[in-house]
Every structure is written in C-alpha cells, then in structure tokens.
Image 1 (tube, rainbow, N blue to C red):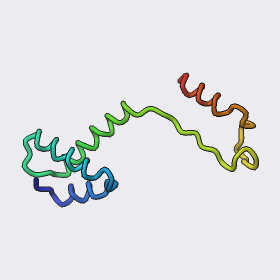
Image 2: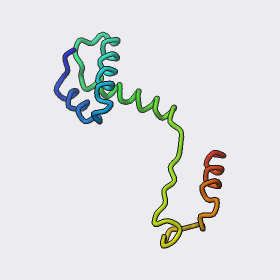
Image 3: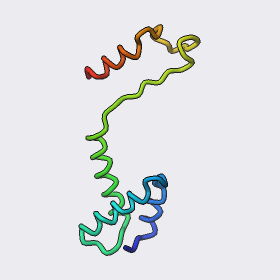
Image 4: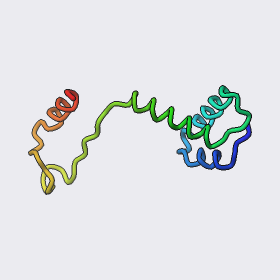
Length: 93
C-alpha cells in the first residue's frame, strides 16, 4: 500500500520494536475504510483510537523514591511498611 511522505515519517518516529505492528494496523484500518493510500489522517485516527483504548485498558501506578530512606529532603515516612500501605491506599481509589 502506498504511503504519503508525512504519514510515513510520522510512523518512522514510533519505537522500532513496535513500528511494524503499528504500520500494519494503520494499513488495515485504512484498507477497511476503503483507502488506496495512507495519509496522515489515517495515522492520526489510528493513534487516537489506540490511545483511547490504552486509557481504558491500562491501570496502574508508579511510586518512585529518591536517595533511599536517609538523606531525602522530601521524605514523608520512615519507610517501615511504606510499600504495603501505599499499595493498599492506591488500590482503594
């Protein structure tokens, strides 16, 4: 399937380890829409659908620390059972 230059460049910025899958997905969606050529509109639409789907699927949280238990000016806890308490609080919301 033919690609417009800007659409091809946009997909070129996708990380290499998922680029082939993304390209196939864009082509599949464009083909289903009856397109003979991939445009930037196809890439953008596919990206929006993927991001929307990802928002609905991805759940989680990240807790990061700095400098360990000692020496961190932002420390709010001694660290005793902190991870268990944080996990409990985050799961409750």
